[in-house]
View 1: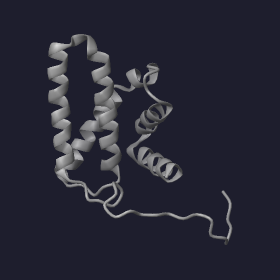
View 2 (view 1 turned 180 degrees about the horizontal axis):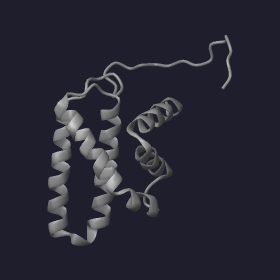
View 3 (view 1 turned 90 degrees about the horizontal axis):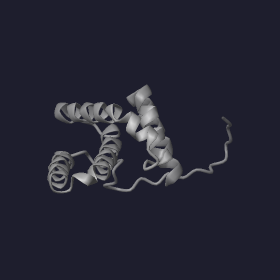
View 4 (view 1 turned 120 degrees about the vertical axis):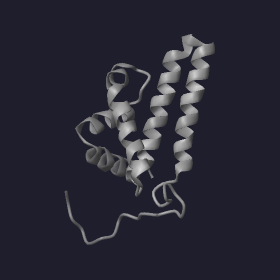
Length: 130
C-alpha cells in the first residue's frame, strides 16, 4: 500500500452499466430459461452433459456478479443464495477441470470463504480489467 497526492487513477462510471443499473427480475427469468434449455438439450443429446453443465455454471457466475453489486429485494436475495449454494456444490468440478479459467477457479475459492470476499475480489478485478 502506498500513498501519493498525485491523481493517477480515473474511474469512469457509465450510465446503465451493470454496476449502476438496477437489477431487474428479467435477468432472473433467463436463469429459468437456461434450466429449461439444459433439460431439453440433455434429453436429446445426453453426451453433451459436461458442456451443458459448464455453460450453466458460467451463467450462474455471471448472474452472481450482477447480484452482488445490486440492491436486491427478498426474492432476488433468495435467488442469490441459491446460486451461491449451486456454485459451492459444484466447486470440485470447477477446481478439477481444465475447462474452467483461473478467474473462475479464483472466484469459487473466494466464494467458499464468503460472499463479501467474493464481492471484494470481483470489484478489484473489474477495476483492473476496465
